[in-house]
Amino acid sequence: MAIVTTVPASALEFGNRIDAELYRPSLRRSFEKIFRTGLPVKHLRQVCMIRSGTTPPDRVDGLTAGPILFKTTDIRNGVIPPKSDYYRITDDVHRRMTKTKLEDRDVLLNIVGATLDVIGRSAFVSRLDDEANITQAMVFLRCQTPDVLPGFLFAYLNTKYGQDQIARYARPTGQYNLNLQEVGHLCIPLLPVREQQAIEQLVLSARDLQNISTATYAKAEQDLESALGLDNLTFQRRVGYIARFSDVGLLRRADAEFFNPELRYFQDELSKRLPLKLLPEVADVLKFSNPTYGTIGVPIITQKHLSNIAPSGYGDDLLALTSWTTKNPAAVLRKFDLLYYSVGAYLGKTNQWLANDEAVHASFITMLRCHTENYSGYLQVLLNSQYGVLQSKCFQSGTSQPYIYPKDIRRFLIPDASRSIRSMIHNLVIESYEKSRESKLLLEQAKARVEQIIEAAVQP
Image (tube, rainbow, N blue to C red):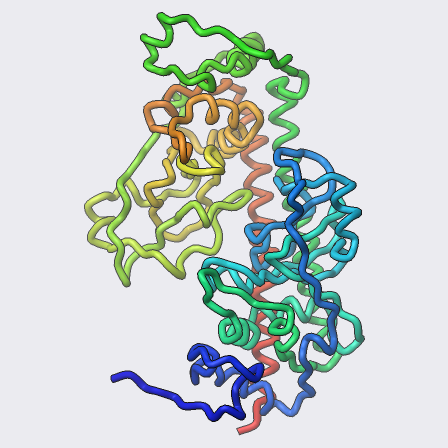
């Protein structure tokens, strides 16, 4: 039986909103608790500058340098890494968007998203290598008073007290939306400054670990490029190129991308330094159908969970029935398995499974199971390198959406680096992952500490 809650017109939020979710009792409970703590409570508009960005119509796709333009996918409830594959804009566009130029210790908040999993995600900005800006799908929150420290604000937004308010105010109009008025209406209890400082220190320590993780993974990339000589290879692109008709018939491919001479150039040059092996000589290429969903089972890793090194954020949505995993034991991920994104815009992106959890992957991902452990980190960095991405682009199929078949992944050629080089790169990847994991644990501690203080202060 449905429960109907009636609200008098005088009690309408924002004076005119009647959507039911805004008045849902389960979401209001945590909100009401804030006012029973005895702590001062303020709206974000009272303590923060709040601005949303723009998505410039004259932006140029494919830039590899210049100011960063953050997108919603970059906002992951964590500290923004100083380096990553960010979208870039020109200096002219960035100067035109000067009002939303980011500063150190700004907090970013997604205000547009397809689901509640996207809207309300936040990020802490600190020590970026480049200047940065934001799109209209997010806001920056810049603390303007000593009452609220940025690290505390970021941690608070990730608590149930912050997230429940966002879930209440978000308007599901095709996509979920928050406007600036609604963001400014979010309430925050003012914890004692000493507590805020301790919480912010956890966030700053997490930032430092995240930066070490980023630098360590960058060293793995640099060491691979140096070992293979990729840093000295430059292909002179041509206006056009020719493929023999006999090759088109034999290989059953007529698309220009497949015959891109750049790949052949790299393979010829690499073969002068090291032998090239077919991928199946070093790893099994495994593809499974989509698991059967259930309410009890093991997490399903999808493309949205892939990050810089290893999947994250899984376990709260799709689960695979235990009966399916029992019938498909080889589909259960093992430590050091590689997850290769085989459908979509980020085709070729490769993560490594480094958790001790049981999980399986969705059908848009292909699993690579290395024959020896120290190949996994090396192969991960290789597949994400310029040469690895080039192979993925050449072998991809599809028109509206790119995809790649396991039979084509098996045709990838892998430079056979020495065991010492493979181990060195593999160990750097593991070290980077461990620092990132420690960083996330500190952020969880910061969030938990905020919730503990609020809970302890609530009056019966």
